[in-house]
Length: 65
Image (cartoon, rainbow, N blue to C red; front, side):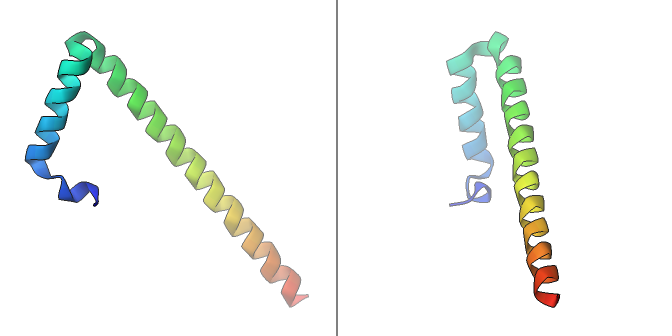
């Protein structure tokens, strides 16, 4: 199941549940924390992909020698 399969009604239900759990005062803090976490995850994933590309490039250059 991917995110696109949830649909608009599912997203509305999720938002209502989050609002009930955390309340309107905590919601901006939760959103900020989630955003920072996703940004850090994305940065880490990009770093890992860059490292893999460097290793592959080194293997290729070693084979050509």
